Length: 505
Ligand code: BG6
Image (tube, rainbow, N blue to C red):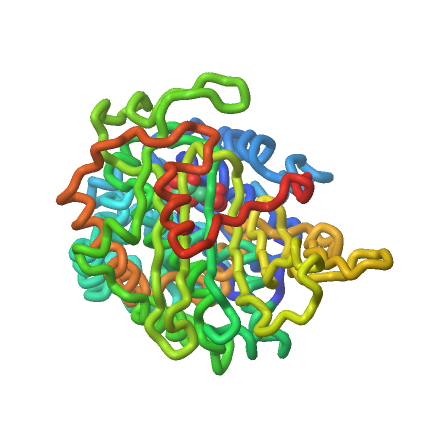
């Protein structure tokens, strides 16, 4: 097919080929990569699963439905889908049967026949975590991943259920594969605005000198969702918001804000710098957990005029469930740069808005010489990075109001992606898949990062388990979570920052 020159011929084998992730995210992302000429010239996708399809054509038809429903570019686009999908095949398989693996090998050999070059083989494990681990073991035993330079494995989160299971998983994987073969996805890292944090911080001379505890009062990270657990009650009952969002996405955002400047853009260099942050985050002692964290669970109620059920009424959820759908916490990073700067985080489902925001709140100006009446609306500087759905960065500073009197007003200077660029922003999975294909691990979680993140979470999990919540459900759908979350940040005279409604489209 048409495609990027000088990229190694590649075969992408997706386990879970008839599943939701493939349909919603992977194929739409691959189609976009194809349309933008980012796939290798020789590129084949094999979806493997247990659902029978009569022909490859039928499978492609199902995937096209997914593209129409979930992709930003939905159409055949002058035969482009036709051309792209002629490289997609279906492989019916029962993975519990050892003989299946020989068939997978044969299929790969057949599809890559005539390529005259050793292909890169990517196994994407788009299946439940337990199955992914089992599959990885089979691929190893059946010798499908023997050449570490030419085979890669992609794992979706969660990577373990707690520190111990994460270590065990790592021990197993590292006994079979090289770390360079393992791509652990945290889809937040593929988001354009998240990657831009590195550009913002390290490609400008302006911000880095004030990016420390001399100038920054505190940092906030909010990842709010308006949806509930949808059809994932079974998974969520085992996870909860702390495992589902904080252990990975939120801590990764925190690392992007707090990391030291990397010496190069080498994948390991960047990941080293992030791991340093995770290691420096102060671990909460058992008796500090309750004062520094808040957990919540949504009740039944109404949202946008519609009745919604509470978490405990959701499908596959225990009617007495103690599982949290909201977390707020305060962390400190014990290093030179961040000593005594609180990092407040919050995340939850069924909240008022879908928004991911990072706020850097600067300290007050050291001296204030304006007349008292000028100061009524005076506010310290603030930088707000909107990750989604708005994609912008706004810096708040003081301006003089026009007129004969000296009255000050906070105003925003805004960089908006939509206004600054005409290009389409790639979806996170486009970026991440492109990186797997080209073998770039920068945006993927390394084993030690995963472990370091679990070490931060573990004391919270333990303390919460020892003291089950007595007030669940404790927040209404469409709110900003339990009142205690406001209280957590208000204690030090702060408040959570939301984008003003005028900003939103
Ligand atoms: C996933 C979580 O990792 O991230 C989901 O498992 C959550 O529960 C989702 O809804 C949020 O991702 P995004 O990109 O919509 O913010």
